Structure formats: structure tokens, C-alpha cells
Image 1 (cartoon, rainbow, N blue to C red):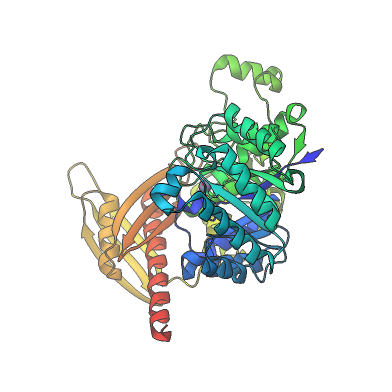
Image 2: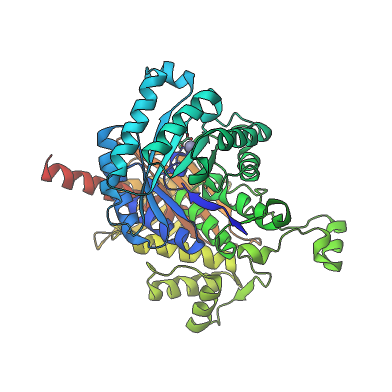
Length: 515
Ligand code: KIV
Ligand code: ZN
């Protein structure tokens, strides 16, 4: 069976989603999960774009062993050198060089001639090739470029040593038949086409990203660039889970395999959603809450009689167990560990004692703990464990509200180990609680987004709150889950404030060290 490589760019293109900021520790948690998932390539960031990105690429490179770890780079000397330095510690290092090739970009963005672009591309690939074997080249906005010119550019960079050729649909403009035909043409006309891997990279502006990527695969692409949950710039990138499950479910048609451990898909999706604060739409293919739910009576009846009447995939194949009722307050540590192992969750950064305490508290509040609850709990503890010590901790919270009274919050926090109390009113319960926390911490960021979602069904379900806050040009997300959504809201806000605090401390340390 032919193999299609999965190139994951959640940490680079995915992070370009509005509001999807991740700190380095969170990127490491995701990178390790991507390795468990079995992706072939991790694009860890754009090393030259900031110190933070450089460090993130460096740390991801050192943290994973199996996937190739890449940094993105423009065709500039500084970019290429920074990218190569950032992946130095990777077991399988690589660089991803790109430059735009469409006339629109040449004229209105780069102000370069076609000749200049070919020269810049060849120069950058040649420079990188002296130090690295694994070089991917992307022609940005390829789908709107002159096909003859694409042939010229790709011929030149293959000669210079590029091993992977990527044909991005940067603006999500092309249609599946056209994209497939483009791959066919390029593979026929570019000399050396059979020596390189052809790669598809699609954006979802017209909702075609998965269809386009599959059309590319049918026409010889052997790498698909994608993100978990399809997050990314504007309408997002190709969703990894959709491509992987499409080629698995329709194996007889595509005749290809991926190396993805599909049973890790659901946990990966939840982790990315929890870290980025970007909720997955309920009807999202494969990982949406309703993806395997049968509502209509006629469907339920059909599924009960014979599952395949209405199911083309098993929920188990993406890691969603059918026996979802798992643990309760009488379950012990062994049962918890066993279930976590069965679910294949990464425990690297998890403090087992804290996890067990959190599980007990949850099991007390809620009769039954489902796999989804467990996945959320482990993701929350992974992020907490990976992050540097929190400055602010919630000790106690009491919020009252009625149709006759103004909401009133009493909060006790531990700040740097010392307990402080405060109380006050607000427009609503969350507002009252956030105002008191802001007073106690003396942090008054702008709240850009606040969202709450139930992790499972039932009135005792855990609420998962995600918020996006910004202060002094820094934007961070915060997450919290609890059976009480006001508590979850407070935890999410404190999580965001802790991240802001860490960023501030890092900036201060940088300033003290000096340039
Ligand atoms: O969409 C795009 O063109 C990109 C390139 C940098 C590959 O993300
Ligand atoms: Zn892109």
C-alpha cells in the first residue's frame, strides 16, 4: 500500500488562527501528542519570526524523536540560518523554505520579477542544502500562479536539492478537479518529479480543503499538510482527521495508507481545542460532538439492528469508546490509571497525585466520569504540569445571584503563596467574579472572548470555559473546567492571568539580560 505522509502544521499555520495563541509549554504538550498520533512531519514554527518561535521550534525539535521537525523560512539568509539552528537538536531535522510565485504576490507584495523569485528560491535551497538533507520548498499561492512558471520554479529548486515540493492553495481558491489536474500536470512536466515527494497544502476558504487535498492524493501527492481540527489562518487548513479517516474509510478508492494511529485522533482533537480555546463545532466531521450521534428514531432503530446501516466508521476507530460510562467515585487509582492507559493519553507532564485529587473531586460532583471527562482532565493537568509554577491559585469562591439582587462574588486567592480575600458586585456572576479577581491580582486585561461548553451531556456535566484576554499587546488564552461553570470561569480567567504573568516575567528577564 502506498503511504501518504501526514505533515502537521497545527503549531505553525494552526497557530495563525485568530486567537489561537499557545505558549511554548503548550506547544510541547501538543508536539508529544502529535508524535503519539504518528504524524510524519511536525512544522514547529517559523524560527525567524520571533524569539518565542525560535525557542518553541528548538524545544519541540529536542522533545520528539520519530517525526521530522521543520521550521518555516523565507528565502532570506537570516531566515534560513535561524531555521537550521532551531532544528539542530532534532533527530530528524528539516527546513521548509517558501516564496510566493503568483503574479499578484510578485507585483503587489514582493515587488520582485519572476527571475528574481527563481534566483531567491534556488539561492535559499542551495544554502540550506549545504547543512541539511531534508528540504521542503513551497510556492506560496501556487494555485493562482502561472502553471508554466510553476514548472520553471519547481524544476530549478529540485535541481538545487529540494526533496519535497509543496503546491499550496494559500487562499483556498481552487476546486478539487483543478487542483488534481495541477498535480497531474506538474508531475508530468517537471524534470525530476519522480525524485521528490509532492505535497498538498490547502486552506478552507470555500470549504474545499479536504476535497482538494484528496484530489491531490488521487493525482500523486504523497504528503498532505494539515492541522488538528482544521484550525488555521482565516477559515483554517485541511483538517488532519478528515483526510486520515477519508483515506482509511475509502481505502479501496484511494489505495493509500497513512501512519496515523487513528485511535489517538479524538484525544488529540480535545487537547488542541482545550489548549487553543477554539471549540470544535458540534457537527464537525469526525471529531464533532454529533459526529457519531444518531438522533432520528429511524436512524437509531437502524443502527441498533445493524450498525453499518448508518455508520461508515466506528467511534472506536478515532478513540471514542462505545462503553463510555467508565468511572465513578468508588473507582480507585488503579482503575483510573488503567483507563488512562486504555485511552492512550500522554502522562509525561501530569502529576499523578494532583490528577487523582482532581478526579476524586470530579467524581464527587458528578455521578459518572466519562472518557471525555477524563480526556479533559488529563489535558488540563498536562498543561498545568508543563507550565511554570502558577502565581495565582483559586482557594475559595462564592458567588450569589437572584432575580432581585445584584450578583455578588467573594473570592480567596493564593498569590505567591499568600492568601488574599476580596468581594464585589458585577453585571452578572462571571462579571462579578472576574472583577474581584482583577482587583486582587491588580491585572485588568481586556476580555476578548469568553465561551462555555458542556463536555458531556446531563445537568451535572462539566462546563469547559475558554477565554481570550489581552494586555500590553500580549494575547493569551485561558481554560478551566468544572461541574460549576462559575468555578470553571474563574479557573479559566486565572489560567490566562498566570500566562500573562509568565510572559511579563520573561520579558523582564530578557530586558535585564539586554540585547
Ligand atoms: O498557505 C501557505 O501558502 C503557507 C505556506 C507558507 C506553505 O502556509
Ligand atoms: Zn498555509
